[in-house]
Length: 624
Image (cartoon, rainbow, N blue to C red; front, side, top):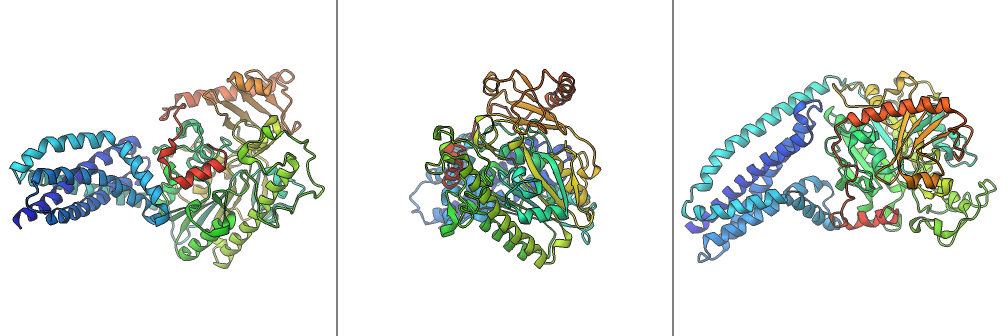
């Protein structure tokens, strides 16, 4: 019995020591990686460290206890050395499970077991060096453990006080920094915030922006009653890169996110959700695009982050993603349960994304209605397989289905707005409505996709802001603005200030004229573009892009007159070209001075490291 008790004691000591070592290792890694020692990100890094240390210690000790109980059941004839080897290896590997359980505890359902397993695998890969060093040290020390039972007890006496001081310091400083940030928040007057985004929504396919079809009655009315920006652009016409800029208020080169689709958001970024969380808000997100999966770290700062493509709901599941009705319903359910608290909610709807498959009756609503665009038929080979709708090769049919997706989404948005009103939240909720990018319907021989070029069909996005308290009058704003302006604007409206904020966007309430900068392409030498109220200068250093567009390194488009941007007029208007070149050069020079934390040629994620259902959705979207 004595031997078995010793096994339990040793297991607990081993688990505690390894947990403490890992806590210190991981805390220092996170703090150094995210540059939180500068404290310009307030309590976010400290809160992360606090979670790491406390959670790891708790889970490692629990697992150590469980392994110790198992070892007590082993026959006494089994040697201590073998038992310790087995327990040590299991404890170290299960630390990955500990962290993963914490990260995915809200969504840890039987249907997500594959997701869970892949995440553990990814964690082990990311910390392989630490695991190997720990295993080697453990192997070397095992003989001493066998001869001296007090060895781990000695280590415990050394490390436990250190860990207590570390955790206590983190908790105290985290609390203090949070209080500092929250002094800017008048809780009795603080607004709720709803960030409502629709994937792949062209501004010019909404009635509010002059479209001839009745695709968006709800959005149109919402825009007429609030502040509508008619000349807003995204910073990169692809989901990951666009949202990285929108949520951080910074340009692509500062976010450090790679060019690829389905890619991680570097941890150094300060996200809108993290700011609201640290300001005392309850935060939630409801996602329907796997590019924004937790795996890619877009969930930072959210208390609740639902990846709706993982949920099973019978006929609502189509092509591996979920329709806007489910996304909106989940949002409404959450708001209903949390309406007594100040909240920040991000709802992202993906329906207009190719392939365009609206449910009935929306799939026939605009077919042959006489309002088509008279596109010429296109060879099927020019349409990506993921976007094809059977054997249809008439772009007008594809556009009718795309418009049906918008109308279906618009009806669901109407339900969400009505729910806010029913809950009595419409008078104290800031609503930002926009999209990550648009869609090309054949412009420049590019069909039913986005991201390749910086033209208006993909870069121009809708933007409407409602703030019942500060923006009580409706307005149409024609000043050029960008999605990086959303973060500083909403923080200003919510009366939240961030000292030494890294934002590059501007507060839209200032009304100042802005040049807009757009990046695009799929090669290392990607395109950079500068745009003002009517002119657009494209810098395309890649010879392949130049050949495809029939231009040189620079091209100038008068997009207000040339809607399809097919006439390069750089030779006719040299003064305009030179003016925009100066702006672009200054902007590029600013970017080169930044300390880029991510290689532009970074590899795309490895398929084996992401869960199966997310992979299916990404493939159905044509990302893979």
